[in-house]
Length: 285
Length: 288
Image: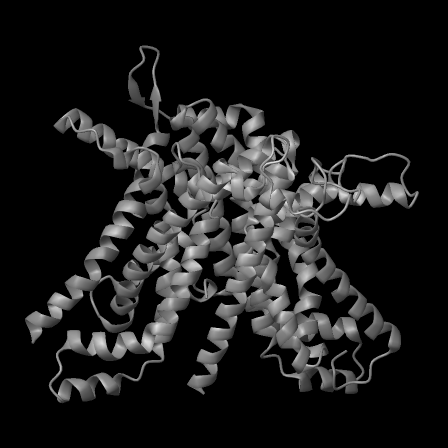
Protein backbone atom coordinates (compact mmCIF):
# COMPACT_ATOMS: atom_id res chain seq x y z
CA UNK A 1 0.00 0.00 0.00
CA UNK A 2 2.78 2.36 0.97
CA UNK A 3 4.68 1.64 -2.21
CA UNK A 4 1.57 2.14 -4.26
CA UNK A 5 0.84 5.58 -2.84
CA UNK A 6 4.42 6.61 -3.57
CA UNK A 7 3.81 5.55 -7.13
CA UNK A 8 0.77 7.86 -7.37
CA UNK A 9 2.71 10.76 -5.93
CA UNK A 10 5.39 10.15 -8.54
CA UNK A 11 2.76 9.91 -11.28
CA UNK A 12 1.18 13.25 -10.33
CA UNK A 13 4.43 15.03 -9.61
CA UNK A 14 6.59 14.18 -12.64
CA UNK A 15 4.66 16.18 -15.26
CA UNK A 16 4.34 19.12 -12.87
CA UNK A 17 8.06 19.15 -12.15
CA UNK A 18 8.90 18.86 -15.85
CA UNK A 19 6.55 21.74 -16.67
CA UNK A 20 7.74 24.06 -13.91
CA UNK A 21 11.44 23.37 -14.25
CA UNK A 22 11.79 23.15 -18.02
CA UNK A 23 9.44 26.00 -18.90
CA UNK A 24 9.58 28.34 -15.90
CA UNK A 25 12.57 27.90 -13.58
CA UNK A 26 15.39 27.08 -16.00
CA UNK A 27 14.39 29.64 -18.66
CA UNK A 28 14.38 32.40 -16.05
CA UNK A 29 17.76 31.32 -14.69
CA UNK A 30 18.98 31.41 -18.29
CA UNK A 31 17.50 34.90 -18.62
CA UNK A 32 19.42 36.04 -15.54
CA UNK A 33 22.68 34.48 -16.77
CA UNK A 34 22.30 35.96 -20.25
CA UNK A 35 21.77 39.41 -18.79
CA UNK A 36 25.20 39.26 -17.12
CA UNK A 37 27.01 38.13 -20.28
CA UNK A 38 28.38 40.48 -22.87
CA UNK A 39 30.77 40.49 -25.82
CA UNK A 40 34.14 42.02 -24.96
CA UNK A 41 36.33 43.88 -27.45
CA UNK A 42 37.76 40.65 -28.80
CA UNK A 43 34.27 39.32 -29.52
CA UNK A 44 34.25 36.71 -26.73
CA UNK A 45 31.38 36.29 -24.32
CA UNK A 46 32.45 37.35 -20.82
CA UNK A 47 30.73 38.00 -17.49
CA UNK A 48 29.88 41.67 -17.21
CA UNK A 49 27.57 44.21 -15.66
CA UNK A 50 27.67 46.12 -18.92
CA UNK A 51 24.06 45.48 -19.93
CA UNK A 52 22.81 46.95 -16.68
CA UNK A 53 25.27 49.85 -16.94
CA UNK A 54 23.87 50.65 -20.39
CA UNK A 55 20.42 50.80 -18.87
CA UNK A 56 21.46 53.34 -16.24
CA UNK A 57 23.71 55.46 -18.43
CA UNK A 58 21.40 55.78 -21.45
CA UNK A 59 18.59 58.16 -20.40
CA UNK A 60 16.22 56.80 -23.05
CA UNK A 61 16.19 53.40 -21.37
CA UNK A 62 15.68 54.33 -17.76
CA UNK A 63 13.34 57.17 -18.70
CA UNK A 64 11.18 54.73 -20.67
CA UNK A 65 11.30 52.37 -17.71
CA UNK A 66 10.20 55.09 -15.26
CA UNK A 67 7.55 56.33 -17.66
CA UNK A 68 6.14 52.83 -18.08
CA UNK A 69 6.03 52.34 -14.30
CA UNK A 70 4.37 55.70 -13.62
CA UNK A 71 1.81 55.30 -16.38
CA UNK A 72 1.02 51.80 -15.12
CA UNK A 73 0.28 53.27 -11.70
CA UNK A 74 -1.91 55.94 -13.30
CA UNK A 75 -3.77 53.29 -15.29
CA UNK A 76 -4.32 51.24 -12.12
CA UNK A 77 -5.74 54.24 -10.24
CA UNK A 78 -7.99 55.29 -13.13
CA UNK A 79 -9.26 51.74 -13.57
CA UNK A 80 -10.13 51.59 -9.87
CA UNK A 81 -11.92 54.96 -9.88
CA UNK A 82 -14.02 54.00 -12.91
CA UNK A 83 -14.74 50.44 -11.76
CA UNK A 84 -15.78 51.05 -8.14
CA UNK A 85 -19.14 52.75 -8.90
CA UNK A 86 -19.93 50.05 -11.46
CA UNK A 87 -19.20 47.25 -9.00
CA UNK A 88 -21.27 49.02 -6.35
CA UNK A 89 -24.15 49.58 -8.76
CA UNK A 90 -24.27 45.94 -9.77
CA UNK A 91 -24.07 44.58 -6.25
CA UNK A 92 -26.19 47.07 -4.28
CA UNK A 93 -28.15 49.51 -6.43
CA UNK A 94 -29.72 47.72 -9.37
CA UNK A 95 -32.46 45.14 -8.77
CA UNK A 96 -31.05 41.62 -8.21
CA UNK A 97 -32.81 40.35 -11.35
CA UNK A 98 -30.97 42.80 -13.57
CA UNK A 99 -27.64 42.41 -11.81
CA UNK A 100 -27.00 38.91 -13.22
CA UNK A 101 -27.63 40.17 -16.72
CA UNK A 102 -25.38 43.22 -16.23
CA UNK A 103 -22.68 40.94 -14.89
CA UNK A 104 -22.84 38.83 -18.07
CA UNK A 105 -22.75 41.98 -20.19
CA UNK A 106 -19.77 43.22 -18.23
CA UNK A 107 -17.70 40.10 -18.87
CA UNK A 108 -18.59 39.62 -22.52
CA UNK A 109 -16.16 42.09 -24.17
CA UNK A 110 -13.21 40.60 -22.33
CA UNK A 111 -13.67 37.22 -23.92
CA UNK A 112 -12.85 38.83 -27.23
CA UNK A 113 -9.19 39.02 -28.21
CA UNK A 114 -7.32 42.10 -27.01
CA UNK A 115 -6.28 42.72 -30.59
CA UNK A 116 -9.88 43.04 -31.77
CA UNK A 117 -10.69 45.45 -28.95
CA UNK A 118 -7.68 47.62 -29.70
CA UNK A 119 -8.50 47.54 -33.39
CA UNK A 120 -12.02 48.73 -32.54
CA UNK A 121 -10.59 51.73 -30.72
CA UNK A 122 -8.31 52.45 -33.65
CA UNK A 123 -11.12 52.66 -36.18
CA UNK A 124 -13.11 54.77 -33.71
CA UNK A 125 -10.39 57.27 -32.94
CA UNK A 126 -8.15 57.63 -35.96
CA UNK A 127 -8.22 60.58 -38.32
CA UNK A 128 -10.53 58.85 -40.76
CA UNK A 129 -12.30 57.22 -37.85
CA UNK A 130 -15.92 56.98 -36.82
CA UNK A 131 -15.77 59.54 -34.01
CA UNK A 132 -14.17 62.14 -36.27
CA UNK A 133 -16.81 61.45 -38.90
CA UNK A 134 -19.61 62.22 -36.44
CA UNK A 135 -17.89 65.27 -34.96
CA UNK A 136 -17.40 66.79 -38.41
CA UNK A 137 -20.97 65.92 -39.46
CA UNK A 138 -22.33 67.58 -36.35
CA UNK A 139 -20.22 70.65 -37.00
CA UNK A 140 -18.24 70.35 -33.78
CA UNK A 141 -15.00 70.00 -35.71
CA UNK A 142 -14.09 71.73 -38.96
CA UNK A 143 -11.82 68.96 -40.13
CA UNK A 144 -10.87 65.58 -38.68
CA UNK A 145 -8.11 65.49 -36.08
CA UNK A 146 -5.82 62.58 -35.28
CA UNK A 147 -6.84 61.30 -31.85
CA UNK A 148 -4.70 58.19 -31.90
CA UNK A 149 -1.00 58.03 -31.07
CA UNK A 150 -1.16 60.26 -28.00
CA UNK A 151 -0.49 59.38 -24.39
CA UNK A 152 -4.13 60.01 -23.55
CA UNK A 153 -5.47 57.47 -26.05
CA UNK A 154 -2.83 54.99 -24.99
CA UNK A 155 -3.98 55.35 -21.37
CA UNK A 156 -7.58 54.99 -22.51
CA UNK A 157 -6.73 51.77 -24.30
CA UNK A 158 -4.83 50.38 -21.32
CA UNK A 159 -7.67 51.25 -18.91
CA UNK A 160 -10.15 49.58 -21.24
CA UNK A 161 -8.02 46.45 -21.59
CA UNK A 162 -7.50 46.03 -17.83
CA UNK A 163 -11.01 46.94 -16.69
CA UNK A 164 -12.20 43.36 -16.19
CA UNK A 165 -9.44 42.51 -13.74
CA UNK A 166 -10.54 45.35 -11.48
CA UNK A 167 -14.32 45.02 -11.79
CA UNK A 168 -14.53 41.30 -11.02
CA UNK A 169 -12.60 41.31 -7.69
CA UNK A 170 -14.46 44.47 -6.63
CA UNK A 171 -17.83 42.86 -7.33
CA UNK A 172 -16.88 39.76 -5.40
CA UNK A 173 -15.87 41.71 -2.27
CA UNK A 174 -18.78 44.13 -2.43
CA UNK A 175 -21.25 41.22 -2.63
CA UNK A 176 -20.41 40.41 0.97
CA UNK A 177 -20.88 44.01 2.16
CA UNK A 178 -23.72 44.09 4.68
CA UNK A 179 -26.12 46.80 3.52
CA UNK A 180 -27.44 47.38 7.02
CA UNK A 181 -24.09 48.99 7.80
CA UNK A 182 -24.82 51.62 5.18
CA UNK A 183 -28.37 52.09 6.45
CA UNK A 184 -27.10 52.51 10.00
CA UNK A 185 -24.53 55.05 8.87
CA UNK A 186 -27.22 57.11 7.17
CA UNK A 187 -29.47 56.86 10.24
CA UNK A 188 -26.64 58.24 12.31
CA UNK A 189 -26.29 61.18 9.95
CA UNK A 190 -23.41 60.22 7.69
CA UNK A 191 -23.38 61.45 4.12
CA UNK A 192 -22.45 59.60 0.95
CA UNK A 193 -18.74 60.43 1.04
CA UNK A 194 -18.33 59.31 4.65
CA UNK A 195 -20.06 56.03 3.81
CA UNK A 196 -17.74 55.61 0.84
CA UNK A 197 -14.54 56.32 2.75
CA UNK A 198 -15.36 54.70 6.10
CA UNK A 199 -17.47 51.70 5.07
CA UNK A 200 -17.27 50.77 1.40
CA UNK A 201 -13.56 51.23 0.71
CA UNK A 202 -12.32 49.55 3.92
CA UNK A 203 -14.60 46.61 3.25
CA UNK A 204 -13.47 46.36 -0.37
CA UNK A 205 -9.74 46.51 0.48
CA UNK A 206 -8.88 42.86 -0.33
CA UNK A 207 -10.55 43.21 -3.74
CA UNK A 208 -8.89 46.56 -4.37
CA UNK A 209 -5.47 45.08 -3.64
CA UNK A 210 -5.87 42.00 -5.80
CA UNK A 211 -7.43 43.99 -8.64
CA UNK A 212 -4.69 46.60 -8.50
CA UNK A 213 -1.89 44.03 -8.49
CA UNK A 214 -3.26 42.24 -11.53
CA UNK A 215 -4.02 45.46 -13.44
CA UNK A 216 -0.61 46.92 -12.69
CA UNK A 217 1.19 43.77 -13.75
CA UNK A 218 -0.78 43.36 -16.97
CA UNK A 219 -0.35 47.01 -17.90
CA UNK A 220 3.37 46.96 -17.23
CA UNK A 221 3.78 43.87 -19.42
CA UNK A 222 1.43 44.98 -22.17
CA UNK A 223 2.89 45.30 -25.64
CA UNK A 224 -0.06 45.36 -28.01
CA UNK A 225 -2.04 48.33 -26.70
CA UNK A 226 0.83 50.84 -26.29
CA UNK A 227 2.29 49.75 -29.60
CA UNK A 228 -0.88 50.12 -31.64
CA UNK A 229 -2.60 52.99 -29.81
CA UNK A 230 0.47 54.95 -28.73
CA UNK A 231 2.28 54.58 -32.02
CA UNK A 232 5.87 55.76 -32.26
CA UNK A 233 5.51 57.98 -29.21
CA UNK A 234 4.34 55.24 -26.91
CA UNK A 235 7.81 54.53 -25.45
CA UNK A 236 6.66 51.49 -23.50
CA UNK A 237 9.36 49.38 -21.89
CA UNK A 238 8.19 46.11 -23.42
CA UNK A 239 8.86 47.68 -26.83
CA UNK A 240 12.49 48.25 -25.81
CA UNK A 241 12.71 44.56 -24.94
CA UNK A 242 11.15 43.62 -28.27
CA UNK A 243 13.55 45.91 -30.15
CA UNK A 244 16.60 44.42 -28.45
CA UNK A 245 15.45 40.89 -29.19
CA UNK A 246 13.95 41.12 -32.64
CA UNK A 247 15.35 44.29 -34.25
CA UNK A 248 18.91 44.69 -32.85
CA UNK A 249 19.31 41.00 -32.05
CA UNK A 250 21.13 41.97 -28.84
CA UNK A 251 19.73 39.23 -26.65
CA UNK A 252 22.00 39.98 -23.71
CA UNK A 253 20.83 43.58 -23.51
CA UNK A 254 17.24 42.45 -23.98
CA UNK A 255 17.62 39.90 -21.17
CA UNK A 256 18.82 42.63 -18.80
CA UNK A 257 15.79 44.74 -19.71
CA UNK A 258 13.50 41.75 -19.29
CA UNK A 259 14.96 40.97 -15.91
CA UNK A 260 14.54 44.57 -14.75
CA UNK A 261 10.88 44.53 -15.79
CA UNK A 262 10.38 41.24 -13.98
CA UNK A 263 12.05 42.69 -10.90
CA UNK A 264 9.84 45.78 -10.89
CA UNK A 265 6.69 43.73 -11.41
CA UNK A 266 7.62 41.31 -8.60
CA UNK A 267 8.55 44.17 -6.28
CA UNK A 268 5.21 45.91 -6.73
CA UNK A 269 3.33 42.65 -6.22
CA UNK A 270 5.35 41.92 -3.08
CA UNK A 271 4.76 45.40 -1.66
CA UNK A 272 1.05 45.12 -2.43
CA UNK A 273 0.82 41.75 -0.69
CA UNK A 274 2.80 42.93 2.35
CA UNK A 275 0.73 46.11 2.74
CA UNK A 276 -2.52 44.19 2.66
CA UNK A 277 -1.31 41.06 4.46
CA UNK A 278 -2.56 38.77 1.68
CA UNK A 279 -0.91 35.81 0.02
CA UNK A 280 -0.35 35.21 -3.67
CA UNK A 281 -2.65 32.21 -3.58
CA UNK A 282 -5.57 34.34 -2.40
CA UNK A 283 -4.97 37.08 -4.95
CA UNK A 284 -4.97 34.92 -8.06
CA UNK A 285 -8.38 33.48 -7.16
CA UNK B 1 -27.55 55.23 -1.90
CA UNK B 2 -28.65 51.61 -2.00
CA UNK B 3 -31.89 50.07 -3.12
CA UNK B 4 -33.44 49.88 0.38
CA UNK B 5 -32.91 53.59 1.02
CA UNK B 6 -34.86 56.48 -0.48
CA UNK B 7 -32.66 58.14 -3.08
CA UNK B 8 -32.83 61.61 -4.53
CA UNK B 9 -33.85 61.80 -8.21
CA UNK B 10 -30.61 63.44 -9.31
CA UNK B 11 -28.58 60.79 -7.55
CA UNK B 12 -30.41 57.86 -9.15
CA UNK B 13 -30.43 59.52 -12.53
CA UNK B 14 -26.76 60.43 -12.62
CA UNK B 15 -25.73 57.03 -11.31
CA UNK B 16 -27.78 55.28 -14.00
CA UNK B 17 -26.39 57.60 -16.64
CA UNK B 18 -22.86 56.77 -15.52
CA UNK B 19 -23.54 53.05 -15.80
CA UNK B 20 -25.09 53.47 -19.25
CA UNK B 21 -22.08 55.48 -20.42
CA UNK B 22 -19.78 52.82 -19.01
CA UNK B 23 -21.50 50.13 -21.04
CA UNK B 24 -21.36 52.30 -24.15
CA UNK B 25 -17.60 52.66 -23.53
CA UNK B 26 -17.35 48.90 -23.10
CA UNK B 27 -19.21 47.97 -26.27
CA UNK B 28 -18.46 50.86 -28.64
CA UNK B 29 -15.25 49.44 -30.14
CA UNK B 30 -16.79 46.00 -30.66
CA UNK B 31 -20.00 47.35 -32.14
CA UNK B 32 -18.19 49.69 -34.54
CA UNK B 33 -15.84 46.93 -35.68
CA UNK B 34 -18.72 44.56 -36.36
CA UNK B 35 -20.90 47.11 -38.16
CA UNK B 36 -18.10 48.28 -40.45
CA UNK B 37 -17.49 44.69 -41.54
CA UNK B 38 -20.74 45.03 -43.52
CA UNK B 39 -20.08 48.45 -45.04
CA UNK B 40 -19.84 48.53 -48.83
CA UNK B 41 -16.53 50.41 -48.81
CA UNK B 42 -12.81 49.88 -49.44
CA UNK B 43 -11.93 51.22 -45.98
CA UNK B 44 -13.10 50.34 -42.48
CA UNK B 45 -14.57 53.82 -42.02
CA UNK B 46 -17.76 55.80 -42.41
CA UNK B 47 -19.69 57.07 -44.43
CA UNK B 48 -22.10 54.17 -44.70
CA UNK B 49 -22.32 53.08 -48.34
CA UNK B 50 -24.85 50.35 -47.90
CA UNK B 51 -24.91 46.80 -46.65
CA UNK B 52 -22.57 44.31 -48.25
CA UNK B 53 -21.23 40.83 -47.56
CA UNK B 54 -18.25 41.40 -49.86
CA UNK B 55 -15.70 41.31 -47.05
CA UNK B 56 -16.87 37.82 -46.21
CA UNK B 57 -17.58 36.19 -49.56
CA UNK B 58 -16.22 38.29 -52.44
CA UNK B 59 -13.35 37.01 -54.55
CA UNK B 60 -12.53 39.84 -56.94
CA UNK B 61 -9.19 41.61 -57.53
CA UNK B 62 -10.24 44.65 -55.50
CA UNK B 63 -12.01 42.78 -52.72
CA UNK B 64 -11.04 39.45 -51.26
CA UNK B 65 -13.43 38.37 -48.53
CA UNK B 66 -12.27 36.44 -45.50
CA UNK B 67 -13.50 33.09 -46.83
CA UNK B 68 -11.17 33.47 -49.83
CA UNK B 69 -8.29 35.16 -48.03
CA UNK B 70 -5.65 32.40 -47.92
CA UNK B 71 -3.29 34.24 -45.58
CA UNK B 72 -5.92 34.87 -42.93
CA UNK B 73 -7.51 31.45 -43.32
CA UNK B 74 -4.10 29.82 -42.88
CA UNK B 75 -3.43 31.75 -39.70
CA UNK B 76 -6.85 30.77 -38.34
CA UNK B 77 -5.91 27.13 -38.98
CA UNK B 78 -2.55 27.59 -37.25
CA UNK B 79 -4.25 29.18 -34.24
CA UNK B 80 -6.84 26.43 -34.08
CA UNK B 81 -4.17 23.72 -34.19
CA UNK B 82 -2.07 25.50 -31.57
CA UNK B 83 -5.09 25.95 -29.32
CA UNK B 84 -6.05 22.30 -29.80
CA UNK B 85 -2.69 20.99 -28.59
CA UNK B 86 -2.34 23.60 -25.85
CA UNK B 87 -5.78 22.89 -24.41
CA UNK B 88 -5.24 19.13 -24.39
CA UNK B 89 -1.77 19.35 -22.85
CA UNK B 90 -2.75 22.02 -20.33
CA UNK B 91 -5.92 20.21 -19.29
CA UNK B 92 -4.09 16.91 -18.79
CA UNK B 93 -1.15 18.33 -16.83
CA UNK B 94 -3.39 20.83 -15.00
CA UNK B 95 -5.69 18.04 -13.80
CA UNK B 96 -2.71 16.02 -12.56
CA UNK B 97 -1.56 19.17 -10.79
CA UNK B 98 -4.92 19.60 -9.10
CA UNK B 99 -4.68 16.00 -7.77
CA UNK B 100 -1.11 16.62 -6.65
CA UNK B 101 -1.91 19.76 -4.65
CA UNK B 102 -5.29 18.66 -3.30
CA UNK B 103 -4.77 14.98 -2.52
CA UNK B 104 -1.07 14.42 -1.91
CA UNK B 105 1.31 15.49 0.82
CA UNK B 106 5.01 15.84 0.28
CA UNK B 107 7.96 17.92 1.34
CA UNK B 108 8.23 21.41 -0.13
CA UNK B 109 4.57 21.33 -1.16
CA UNK B 110 4.15 25.04 -0.33
CA UNK B 111 7.22 25.92 -2.36
CA UNK B 112 6.03 23.95 -5.37
CA UNK B 113 2.57 25.51 -5.08
CA UNK B 114 4.14 28.96 -5.08
CA UNK B 115 6.20 28.02 -8.16
CA UNK B 116 3.04 26.79 -9.85
CA UNK B 117 1.35 30.20 -9.31
CA UNK B 118 4.28 32.17 -10.73
CA UNK B 119 3.38 31.89 -14.43
CA UNK B 120 0.28 33.98 -13.74
CA UNK B 121 2.28 36.91 -12.40
CA UNK B 122 5.18 36.82 -14.84
CA UNK B 123 4.47 39.24 -17.71
CA UNK B 124 3.78 37.30 -20.92
CA UNK B 125 6.57 39.11 -22.75
CA UNK B 126 9.13 37.93 -20.17
CA UNK B 127 7.81 34.38 -20.35
CA UNK B 128 8.22 34.56 -24.13
CA UNK B 129 11.81 35.81 -24.13
CA UNK B 130 13.00 33.46 -21.40
CA UNK B 131 11.58 30.41 -23.17
CA UNK B 132 13.09 31.65 -26.42
CA UNK B 133 16.49 32.05 -24.74
CA UNK B 134 16.38 28.69 -23.02
CA UNK B 135 15.32 26.78 -26.13
CA UNK B 136 18.11 28.49 -28.02
CA UNK B 137 20.60 27.51 -25.30
CA UNK B 138 19.38 23.90 -25.45
CA UNK B 139 19.54 23.93 -29.24
CA UNK B 140 23.16 25.11 -29.21
CA UNK B 141 24.01 22.57 -26.55
CA UNK B 142 22.62 19.68 -28.58
CA UNK B 143 24.24 20.93 -31.75
CA UNK B 144 27.74 21.34 -30.33
CA UNK B 145 27.72 18.18 -28.17
CA UNK B 146 25.74 15.66 -30.20
CA UNK B 147 25.75 17.36 -33.58
CA UNK B 148 21.95 17.20 -33.48
CA UNK B 149 19.75 19.88 -34.98
CA UNK B 150 16.50 19.74 -33.02
CA UNK B 151 13.70 21.65 -34.73
CA UNK B 152 11.72 21.92 -31.51
CA UNK B 153 14.26 24.38 -30.12
CA UNK B 154 13.81 26.88 -32.91
CA UNK B 155 10.93 29.39 -32.97
CA UNK B 156 7.94 27.69 -34.54
CA UNK B 157 4.72 25.83 -33.95
CA UNK B 158 5.79 23.59 -31.06
CA UNK B 159 7.64 26.31 -29.23
CA UNK B 160 4.49 28.44 -29.36
CA UNK B 161 2.51 25.49 -27.98
CA UNK B 162 5.00 25.05 -25.11
CA UNK B 163 5.12 28.79 -24.38
CA UNK B 164 1.35 29.08 -24.10
CA UNK B 165 1.10 25.80 -22.20
CA UNK B 166 3.54 27.16 -19.60
CA UNK B 167 1.06 29.66 -18.16
CA UNK B 168 -2.34 28.31 -19.25
CA UNK B 169 -1.71 25.14 -17.19
CA UNK B 170 -1.64 27.19 -13.98
CA UNK B 171 -5.10 28.42 -14.80
CA UNK B 172 -6.36 24.86 -15.32
CA UNK B 173 -4.84 23.73 -11.99
CA UNK B 174 -6.69 26.52 -10.16
CA UNK B 175 -10.05 25.80 -11.80
CA UNK B 176 -9.90 22.03 -11.34
CA UNK B 177 -8.56 22.35 -7.76
CA UNK B 178 -11.50 24.56 -6.85
CA UNK B 179 -13.88 21.81 -7.90
CA UNK B 180 -11.80 19.03 -6.36
CA UNK B 181 -11.96 20.84 -2.98
CA UNK B 182 -15.73 20.31 -3.00
CA UNK B 183 -15.42 16.59 -3.62
CA UNK B 184 -16.75 14.42 -0.83
CA UNK B 185 -13.82 12.14 -0.04
CA UNK B 186 -15.99 9.63 1.83
CA UNK B 187 -17.13 8.50 -1.64
CA UNK B 188 -13.54 7.49 -2.36
CA UNK B 189 -13.25 5.67 0.95
CA UNK B 190 -16.48 3.81 0.25
CA UNK B 191 -15.23 2.71 -3.15
CA UNK B 192 -11.88 1.63 -1.69
CA UNK B 193 -13.70 -0.36 1.01
CA UNK B 194 -15.75 -2.05 -1.66
CA UNK B 195 -12.57 -3.26 -3.32
CA UNK B 196 -11.72 -0.68 -5.97
CA UNK B 197 -8.11 0.37 -6.33
CA UNK B 198 -7.12 3.99 -6.41
CA UNK B 199 -6.84 4.17 -10.19
CA UNK B 200 -10.40 2.87 -10.52
CA UNK B 201 -11.61 5.36 -7.92
CA UNK B 202 -10.01 8.25 -9.79
CA UNK B 203 -11.23 7.07 -13.17
CA UNK B 204 -14.82 6.14 -12.30
CA UNK B 205 -15.61 8.52 -9.45
CA UNK B 206 -13.33 11.52 -9.04
CA UNK B 207 -12.86 12.33 -12.72
CA UNK B 208 -16.57 11.98 -13.29
CA UNK B 209 -17.19 14.51 -10.57
CA UNK B 210 -14.56 16.82 -12.07
CA UNK B 211 -15.86 16.57 -15.63
CA UNK B 212 -17.66 19.95 -15.79
CA UNK B 213 -14.65 21.77 -14.36
CA UNK B 214 -12.23 20.01 -16.71
CA UNK B 215 -14.46 20.74 -19.68
CA UNK B 216 -14.83 24.39 -18.74
CA UNK B 217 -11.12 24.80 -18.10
CA UNK B 218 -10.35 23.12 -21.42
CA UNK B 219 -12.63 25.51 -23.29
CA UNK B 220 -11.12 28.57 -21.63
CA UNK B 221 -7.61 27.19 -22.23
CA UNK B 222 -8.50 26.86 -25.91
CA UNK B 223 -9.67 30.46 -26.03
CA UNK B 224 -6.66 31.80 -24.08
CA UNK B 225 -4.35 30.02 -26.48
CA UNK B 226 -6.28 31.10 -29.57
CA UNK B 227 -6.05 34.75 -28.54
CA UNK B 228 -2.60 34.86 -26.98
CA UNK B 229 -0.32 37.55 -28.28
CA UNK B 230 2.42 38.54 -25.82
CA UNK B 231 4.12 35.18 -25.33
CA UNK B 232 3.52 34.02 -28.89
CA UNK B 233 5.14 37.14 -30.36
CA UNK B 234 8.63 35.93 -29.41
CA UNK B 235 8.21 32.25 -30.18
CA UNK B 236 6.46 32.37 -33.52
CA UNK B 237 8.25 31.03 -36.59
CA UNK B 238 7.23 31.18 -40.22
CA UNK B 239 3.60 30.24 -39.49
CA UNK B 240 1.93 33.19 -37.74
CA UNK B 241 -1.06 32.59 -35.47
CA UNK B 242 -4.19 34.67 -36.05
CA UNK B 243 -3.44 37.40 -33.45
CA UNK B 244 0.10 37.84 -34.79
CA UNK B 245 -1.11 37.93 -38.37
CA UNK B 246 -3.85 40.46 -37.54
CA UNK B 247 -1.35 42.57 -35.62
CA UNK B 248 0.96 42.76 -38.64
CA UNK B 249 -1.96 43.79 -40.87
CA UNK B 250 -3.32 46.38 -38.43
CA UNK B 251 0.13 47.89 -37.98
CA UNK B 252 0.66 48.28 -41.71
CA UNK B 253 -2.76 49.67 -42.57
CA UNK B 254 -6.08 47.90 -42.61
CA UNK B 255 -8.86 46.68 -44.85
CA UNK B 256 -12.40 45.68 -43.86
CA UNK B 257 -11.27 42.03 -44.02
CA UNK B 258 -9.89 42.58 -40.53
CA UNK B 259 -13.35 43.74 -39.49
CA UNK B 260 -14.83 40.60 -40.98
CA UNK B 261 -12.37 38.39 -39.07
CA UNK B 262 -13.02 40.41 -35.91
CA UNK B 263 -16.75 40.05 -36.35
CA UNK B 264 -16.42 36.26 -36.62
CA UNK B 265 -14.20 36.23 -33.54
CA UNK B 266 -16.65 38.37 -31.56
CA UNK B 267 -19.50 36.10 -32.60
CA UNK B 268 -17.58 32.92 -31.79
CA UNK B 269 -16.33 34.04 -28.39
CA UNK B 270 -19.73 35.44 -27.39
CA UNK B 271 -21.36 32.10 -28.08
CA UNK B 272 -18.60 30.32 -26.17
CA UNK B 273 -18.90 32.80 -23.28
CA UNK B 274 -22.66 32.41 -22.98
CA UNK B 275 -22.47 28.61 -23.16
CA UNK B 276 -19.69 28.53 -20.56
CA UNK B 277 -21.64 30.84 -18.22
CA UNK B 278 -24.78 28.79 -18.68
CA UNK B 279 -22.93 25.56 -17.88
CA UNK B 280 -21.18 27.00 -14.83
CA UNK B 281 -24.54 28.36 -13.57
CA UNK B 282 -26.05 24.91 -13.96
CA UNK B 283 -23.07 23.43 -12.15
CA UNK B 284 -23.42 25.79 -9.19
CA UNK B 285 -27.18 25.20 -9.07
CA UNK B 286 -26.81 21.42 -9.00
CA UNK B 287 -24.28 21.79 -6.21
CA UNK B 288 -26.74 23.56 -3.87
